[in-house]
Image 1 (cartoon, one colour):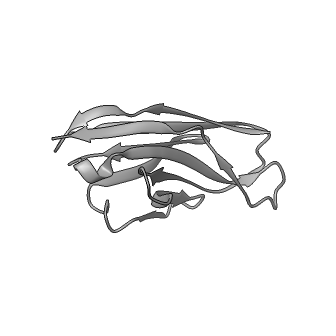
Image 2 (tube, rainbow, N blue to C red):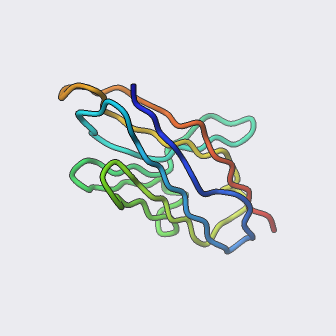
Image 3 (cartoon, one colour):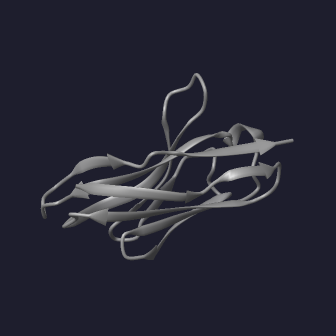
Length: 119
């Protein structure tokens, strides 16, 4: 079993900042990547940012330059969000790709945390 616990999020004003954190625990022998996705009402879930086990980060065009993903501890990633816009409002989900075996490459998801940006 792999568990992802998210923290952070909440309400911010336009131009403000928030930080999300995700801690993975349980039976984990491989982590290929960890990242954040988001889903706004009526829209599909989309990639926000991902960081690989080698530390390579990739971002959606819409957040590039404003958001930063980082490995802050073993099995823990943060997403620092700055210069927030109303269109960043969504439920943010932590994702882990890996699993309990060295060759695992499964997707695991957190429960989601709400981010609301008000003008």
